[in-house]
Figure 1: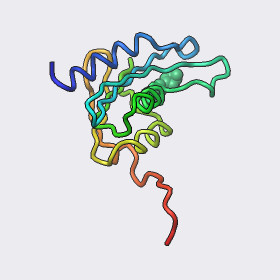
Figure 2: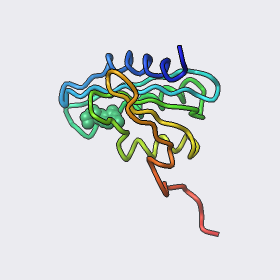
Figure 3: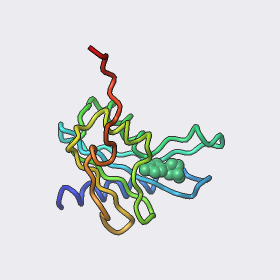
Figure 4: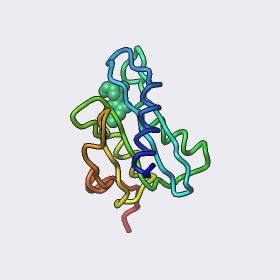
Length: 131
Ligand code: THU
C-alpha cells in the first residue's frame, strides 16, 4: 500500500470513531510523523458546541503523547466536497509541520486535493520577539 493510501485508510478508520451527534459531520485525521509513526484522531463534539475538538487537534494531541513532535505528511477525511482543516487547525498543524509539509484532503473515496502547510496558512503566526 502506498504511503498516501496508508494515511487514507488510517484516517478513514479514525473517522468511523468520531463522536459528532450535533453536526452529524464525522472527520478523521491521520499524521505520519518524521519518526515514522502513523497517528490518528477524530472529531469529538460536545453539547456546549465550542467545547468540541476537531480531528486534527485530536491527532496532534495523540502525536505528542506518542513522543513525536514533527509531522511529515497529513491527511484529513470528511464527507464533503473539500474537507479542509479549519483556521484554528491550520495554526495547530503549522506548530508541528514545516511550510512544505503536504496535507491531503479526502472525501470518503479518494484524495481530492493536496496542499502544503504554507498554502493552507500563509503568513501564519509565529511567536517571535521583535529585535
Ligand atoms: N471538523 C474537523 O474535525 N476537522 C475539519 O477539518 C473540519 C471540521 C469538525 C468540527 C465539528 O465537529 C464538525 O467537523 C462540523 O464542523
